[in-house]
Length: 348
Image (cartoon, rainbow, N blue to C red; front, side):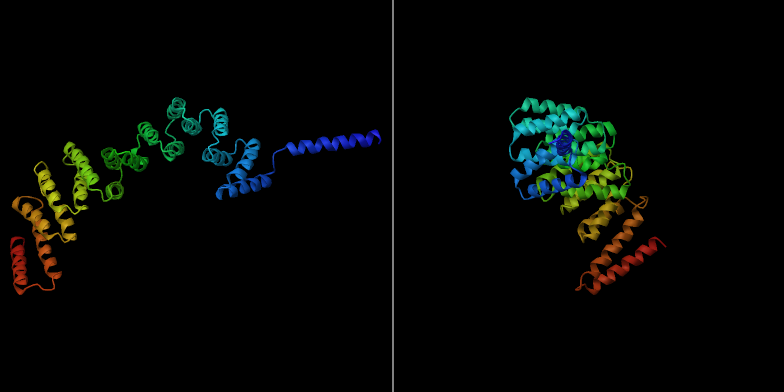
């Protein structure tokens, strides 16, 4: 064999060696990742782990690979490799609180709670109010059953951004899950005060329904929490309307009337709350409650700004009772006619 041929063979061999050590092309990487993902989806963890291991070696900065590989190692309880992977991620992203929390989860899974708490505290210290970061970090904690730290993440983000509405819903759910129903109710209500009134109330009511469900004890605690807020600012219509709602949504109309009557005694706008309650009661065909509320307003006298409206609403109530009662009597119609005549006589 000539020296030239020998050199060419050596050159080709070296070239092939170099090429084999090069990362996969983009298409080859995607194909290998899709294959690994397919194994993961069917829970063939052994084959998936082998592919992810090779992929991570070649592409340690690829977030998709890391985000699949670490949970895979945790699911298979391969904590040794999981710890090594998480430590490597921390070295590469020392200022990323998410990877610190994930390393903490590995430590916790292996019984190293002190080291886990150190990582959790370090992660929490890095929270800076960035919304994406906050959501990701809170999810890492809550998805691993660490609700206490997820709560701390949201509480710190609110303190930094002074925007409680951004995180009120997930924070309220975490409070509720951890048995802190009063905190859940208060953050839900107070966080929405800066919103347009109608949209704010709708958002609060939907969240409160989710929190309370059909649990009478949670409903009682919600009522208690709202009463506390109302007592601090009795003329805050936002709070008082929610207080009426939280009773009526549970069909506790008698208690709603008692609460409104108590609030009316301290209100500078006597009759407004009773008017709102009467309107809601009329819609739900709670005629006795509506009538009591309206008669209370009428009892305030003609000088009350809601007097005329209460009189008109009482006529509407009587009309509605007749319309929805197929067995109404002639005497009922005559009485209603006389009431209309008296109304137009009083307000010509």
